Length: 251
Image (cartoon, rainbow, N blue to C red; front, side):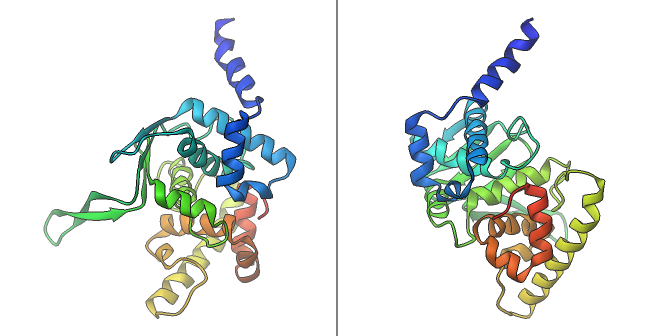
């Protein structure tokens, strides 16, 4: 009997509407949620409930944590899961650390002999060790402009989905084996084109940062899919199709 209690509690939580104050935050701060149909919005609300119940939020750099911050981040992170067959949002994630603005962090780089360190200025990062770091200023700016293709929360949580396959390599866990061939073809071809365009200094409709490596390409494509879906469908129909099939949603 006791083994069922956590499951029953989580089911109740998933089926409970968001408190009015939280629903208001989603409405004001996450315009992308307005495009969901009734069933999708209900699922988003349930995932947000579970996310906020599961995860620890830490304010860094003097930032005081509030429901406004927590709900704004949770709603965007869970938007990626609305069409996926998941019951627990990001089970490998424990902590979200939020800075007021961009922050500085050490990064390791390879040298001709050994390795060295440098200091990077970052807006966010995702780790397979159970944490995500975000800039609140950039989180909010990305949320409030839902058509610019720039959204740090979607980007970093795409890395979380990617890493769930065992390594962050641009290939998250897909629905079944038949999906991997079309995925590799569509993303591989689009990635190579972006790399070539960036190398030739040609203008691109995808963020040039996606040319860094396949993992960053998937994260950049996720931002574009949710925020500039019509443009992606027009210019990269095969890429749009495999992303739509993966995320289980049209944008």
